[in-house]
Image: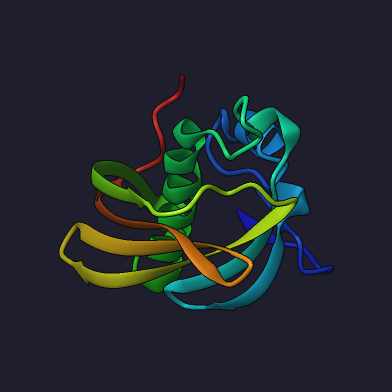
Length: 148
C-alpha cells in the first residue's frame, strides 16, 4: 500500500495477488487522515459487496482489513518494506458494534516490535464510536512474498 498525491491509498507493485485484493476492497478509495511511522488512520467506504444481509460489514472481511493495515504499520515502523514478508501468527478481534454506515474510520498502530515479531492494535470507528478492536501478532520473514 502506498499513498498517492491526492491522499488516497494504493498498492503500487507489492507482492503478486495484492492487486486483486486492492480492487476488491477498493483501496484506492481510502482516505488517509493521519500517518506517521508505525501509525495510520483512514476513512474507508463500506462497499455494498462487503456487506452481509443486514447491510453490515460482513465479519469475515474484518480480519482482511486488519491484516492489510497491520502489515503497513509494521513496515513503516520498523521493518524494511522492500525485503520483508509477514505471517500473521495470532489475531484477536472484539466486535463491539455493527458497521452499517456508508463509511467508517480505522486506525492501526504498531505497539511493539522486537526481533522478528511485531504487535499491532487496530480500532474501527463508526460515527466516533468504537466498533471493532483487534490485536495482531506478526512474524517478519526475510525475502519476498511467495508466489501464488
